[in-house]
Length: 463
Image (cartoon, rainbow, N blue to C red; front, side, top):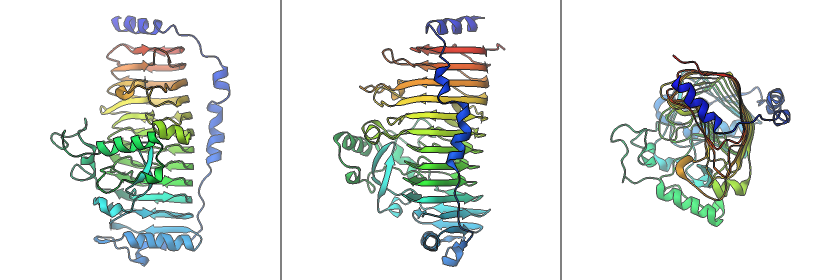
């Protein structure tokens, strides 16, 4: 009874009032079918190009990077089709560049093992690092301003990152095995400070040149300014940093993908400043957030002003990670109209289920998040977490957070049911929780500076 009393007191401090029905009328679950239909799908000519015909060898020894790229170029020049990489283990010493109208298809028992030598990913390309545009190492799989591209099949892509190569550039990290990364070792921090200062000063992105010596890791798979993107069926392992990272792209499908990557900042899927995204039937087991929706960081995010919007996430499984479905923290361009349904989240090493993170240095907005039919077994922190003091940063750009709707969610074990911390002068505007059960919470929920909180048929069973 002590738990119920403490929780009730915390809720009463917020003076909750009901959210008007008008907040749900303009966009809501009725919008999902239209969003998915708008995304559509890719279409590739019925022509196959076998990478081995261009010199690729699945012997684990021969560098097949040039052969795979030559097959992609030939397919592209012929009007498109499918580049097939047969079963085998392929050494790939540098980036694979996807082209319009080409589906790179990895057959069963095919593994692409990418080089861990940073110099193999030069010259630099136009990319983003944690929400800031720059010229940096190429991602191992990269596309720039292409249309109708695919990365499919049941094969594996493995960047072979570990604490002896890419991951050591992170610096000291809370998830590190003992003595793997240490304070004082050379790391990415100086380059991060420099590129963010350049963004604040208005230096054009093309003049922010990093790469060799910078220790800024690349994402693994990055379609940049692309349209009609399909990533389906593959398994992703050991990424340098963010695993699947579509940026400024439209009509993106990530389906049936397995991500198993436990390094620092190894988020599973980070669609950033994209429109119309479908993520379904995927499994995420990661060293950071399973799915984290981004839209640029601070000055650069506000400069581009491109929100992430119209996302549907469904039928996914989340295992280890910092959060199951996350909005932020690089969200200065805004995040809105996000739908999450029919997902399972369960691991003692999954910290939160639904997480929104921002601060008054980011600006932007997080709005119109709809969650339903989510089963949470165990998380180590909060089932629902909204924290506007993320990373203890402050500034003059308080974010707007409003219209969060959660229904038919059940959880079995957590530290908190809710952890909501708004800003005193800019509180979280509205949260509605319906028909949910939060069992096995160890501590009373934290609810600070929430202007409108509505709970309908919400229960907190005691053991």
